[in-house]
Image (cartoon, rainbow, N blue to C red; front, side, top):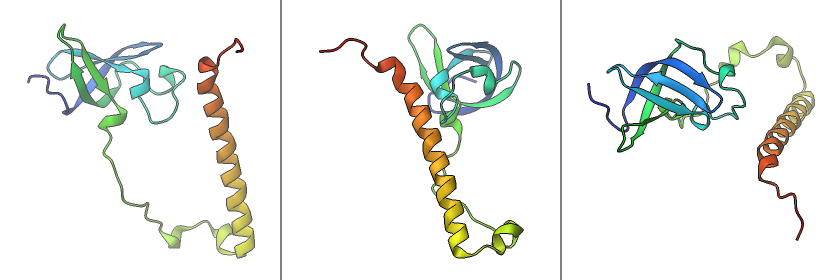
Length: 135
């Protein structure tokens, strides 16, 4: 089976580095999933997301003239534009008996915590790009 750009196939993680993971494809070829193509989340350590001999679905991004294959795990995931369906019968019992104000207060608390986490993550990403000298 030839390697086709844009195709999603299942492969096996054969090696992990600090910049990504090598994946063996069904036809025997091997390609690289760069650390930025592992997850939509910020990936600090590849080993937090992948293990050797793990089966993964990858999208073939490109094949260079010298035969290097670029792969993506995050782009292999199907895109869903449908909103998440909520089964209201299975909502937490505690929330069923909360007043609207209590639910709103809980939502704001959760939202602020998530915003704080995003700010911390963005702060980590931007540290390497900051200039150290002044103009």
